[in-house]
Image (tube, rainbow, N blue to C red; front, side, top):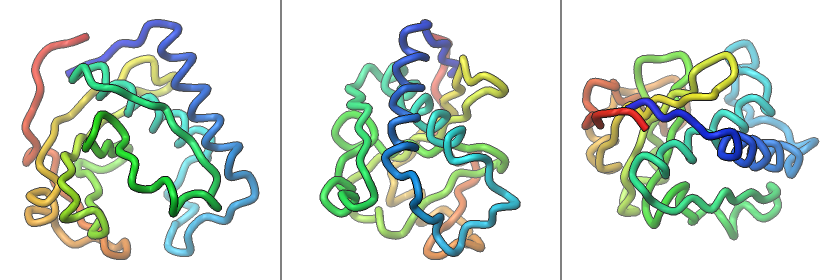
Length: 161
């Protein structure tokens, strides 16, 4: 399903992404991150916020647009990306979505979304699956306690918004 943003939606999600970025200025990336495969943190944060908003718009669920510093992460990490139990993962370069072991058993639903470059004015919501099922169906990856789930295993949504 392709989600097209109104200007105010695009602006607000972009503000949230930038707030997430600036809330963590100076924080080092995790040691397992490969800078050669990454885009700028600012771009990644804005695109991820837009993906979350797109899923919320697509399924008519609440999006809080929260952000916090690394020091507050342990207090806030339980918050879902959308609604009460939606985990949104941005897909950027692979034909698969990342599934993390630490989120298994939490009653989550995984949604995958791809922000359309270069400006991210649209997001394609690629599909969804029960998070625990996604973990079981996923294939091992080169990231710590992470599997990749092929996109063709997701339940697809139909239409455009």
